[in-house]
Image (cartoon, rainbow, N blue to C red):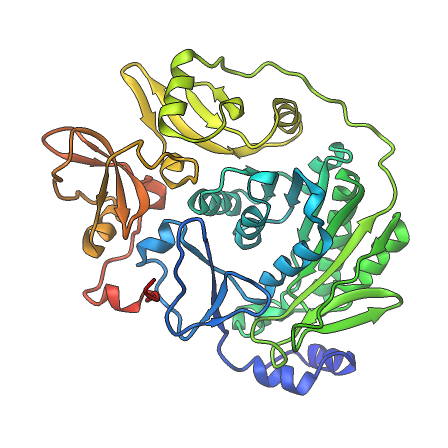
Length: 462
């Protein structure tokens, strides 16, 4: 079932129980989600907590996420449990007094680790979530929007673009594209494996690390992770980085978590997650601290914004949001809240292709302002800004399909469609009908079975 060269190699890796690993890979993948506590304060019924993540839970079966309005509203994210260990790394490498943080998730799509980082840094930081592939970057932007935090900018760049941002970031996560051995429960991952591809991945990972290294500040933290067991992509690449750059390994305390394996390769510490030892997929993570400086100083760009804010812009922002007025910018006809100073934002615009600049609040039209879907899902929207219509399950699915929905006993104008009290998006009551403003590209396309409501997550009562 598995490549013979792969089996031979894992049998030679003393920190892996190869027999237990191979047996576990034949079992179904565990199902886990991470909850967005800014939107939902309940836990899934009949679930178990992920030991290393305060908001992570294992589910007893795989639900239909597509048919769950709470998923589309950003109340939770389906994420593989091993990758949630990022929370422990983040907590251990940071001090409470670290203040405002600039964080980069370099290979961010589809957004599991980005939404996790976004929640952890909260209002005390800026997250740049980057993805080079256009289609994957669109998915990343959608998931960031649904999560609703206003601290994230999404970019679409090759890692080399970040080499010009010398010393900009406090923390960089490189969840590197890899040979995918940790996902061998999926037959596609097995079929795509080859020894040649593991070597190709290793070379590409070194190029990515080299490109992004200048953008990390002195004493900054680089978190390197993969979903493979291959030493050439894991500890050997970390050793190579230490050898080529001024850096040191940061130890992570795993004493409270049964099953995680610490490896020591020529003084390089890494942490392995192996099916059969933990409940999750295969995962590797290691942490470096930069001990040297970048020799080139990044030029600070002071550039006039493409649009000038008006008094009406400021008035509508205050009326609809709790976002700070100093964070507001206008790009052509759109008004945004950006999670960065004007200086930093202009510097990012100068060097990067930005596809989501913080939270888009509204568009300015001749007859007034049109609220944006990003605002409806944002933590920054005022609860009293718009009336709300709470839809039942059937109507919520109709809304997500962008079908016509029933007329509501609600005043004319903009209102928010909600489900179980959580915002889904905007509608406009124009009197003789209600217009559905759910984004066309996001609409649910599958047909809705009569049993749709059965296979979604059940939540514990408060």
